[in-house]
Image 1 (cartoon, rainbow, N blue to C red):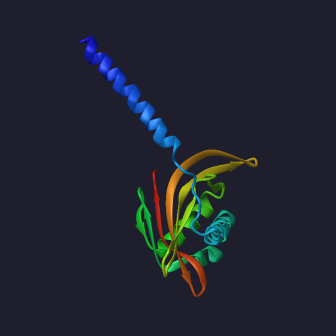
Image 2 (image 1 turned 135 degrees about the horizontal axis):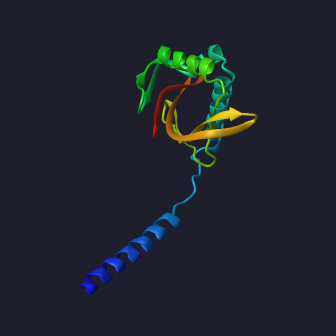
Image 3 (image 1 turned 90 degrees about the vertical axis):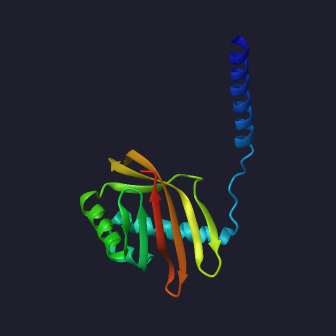
Length: 160
């Protein structure tokens, strides 16, 4: 009986050591294209500055008309429903702010289309100039490089 317990103990220790070695060897993200990364990060910032201000007319230009917004809790929404959802949040929850989790965003090119942006973002309550009650969630944005500029054509929001 003691032999089995010792073997289990040794196995757990070995797994922990191997696991920490694997995680410590994870390389930091380095963009394939720094120019693309900065372009998408700028567009992301513009999008959510517009959303945080509640400027729905300006917000619309950031999405393609064939937008598909997949939300793990809310389901699938198209362009009009997504704009309506932003309008509702702006009207009823104007104190909500979106903040990117530093170091979490990755951007990859999509040949002859645009870019994939993944990361973590928080939605927080703005009270007296401070962010409180933040929830952290995962997202994927598919950006399309159109004749009118960069627009989001697909959103996947999950981990709610």
